[in-house]
Amino acid sequence: MRVVERRLDKNGVIRVTGPAMLVVNSGRISVLGAVYGPGSRLVLHKCRSYAVKALEESELKVTLGEEGSVEEPKPGEEVIEEWLSVAEKVASKGGRVILVGGVESGKTSLAALIANVGLSLGRRVAVVDGDVGQADVGPPAFVSMGFVERPLVWLRDLTAESMKFIGTVAPGPVAGSIVASVKELVEEAERKGADLVVVDTDGWVSGMGAAGYKLALIKSLQPASVVLVGGNLGLLAGILARTSIETYVVGSPARRRERSRDERRKLRAEGYRRYLEGGETVRINAAEAPVLGSCVFSGTPVSEGEVEAISSILGVRVLRTSRLPGMLVVAAESRPDREALARLREAYPEDSVYVVTPMEAKGLLVAMIDRSLRELGPGLILSVDYESGTILVRTRYSEGAEGIIVGRVKLDDNYVEVGRITGCVI
Ligand SMILES: Nc1ncnc2c1ncn2[C@@H]1O[C@H](COP(=O)(O)OP(=O)(O)OP(=O)(O)O)[C@@H](O)[C@H]1O
Ligand SMILES: [Mg+2]
Image (cartoon, rainbow, N blue to C red):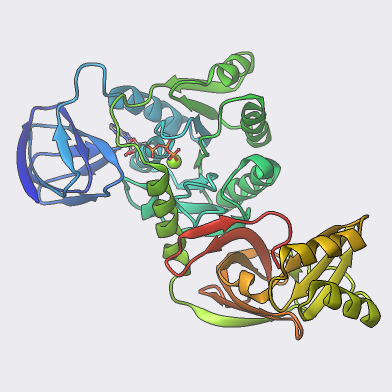
């Protein structure tokens, strides 16, 4: 722990990297448009850095954790003035604002800034978090919406009011589903009174596929403003310049706290934990309840004779089978060896053959859904009894839960991802 005291002139800026605790001894400072006066305290997460701007002559006390730091930005390093000016414009205009930029360009920080400026102008502000990977409002693998009731310095300070399940943390293969879900959340926020809806997005921007996805989102939302953050956005900027959509281009802070792959995974684990810890066990009967995204509980079983044949090929007990067009799915008591699986595939040359086991289902992320298939929130599979069709799920969203949507993310006991699933999960 180190304690640093700093005196800032009016409009002076310092860069503080967490973990840090900031106390304002005198004066007034702004952090992403959130204003702090004498006596206020502010805790900065270890994976983030901030420009702290003095609105008047101010004295600060900063307590720094191991990797924390306080620096004077060199000329040209800081973008906060440019960001503030764009935030003022888009927040005054109101309506829908979409932020687009590469990984770590500053989208989420600028989203918080625009939300804070909107609040200070008296707007009813909502944030829609469309980033399924580095999700900050809801848990990862979901897109979510939350209302901003007080100034904030990180979108993680918000609680999701509504969530839509995307089921994976990589946007590429699910871009269409993200566009549709983000649109629903924006409309919901507006129905509930928001007159400024800030839409944060993921950092997948380079290449045709990514540009097409971001343009599809813009096209679908018809925003009042688009803000392009940082470099590598030539393709998008070029197309938007030929439209009537109001587009702003801002830079990224030249010096900022970046996150390693491992830190990003840990940040996701924190995000899952926030919404999954605690809760109760819910019993889902797959024969009666809506279970979406399950291969085993979607098809029709094969005949008893065929089950016996499959069982003898695999050398393991078969608990349940499911035939779907072009697919044979077998739930087996334990994982058969490679040769046995190869023999089963030979016996069904026309089909894709999948074998799943009860062991593999533990820790799968799901969304709890109500009778109209609307997501209530996340849950984790504890066990699947393939013979009786009973799925046990632990969730904080049990009220009104009638079924589940099965995702493609599996978590260990510490909410850390242990792999992404392709093919059939349960
Ligand atoms: N003005 C600033 N000065 C220094 N660092 C900043 C500033 N604004 C944001 N940062 C830091 O830059 C990093 C990236 O910002 P942020 O998380 O907002 O970007 P992002 O584009 O949303 O990233 P991701 O792709 O991970 O979602 C963070 O550590 C953030 O705290
Ligand atoms: Mg972000």
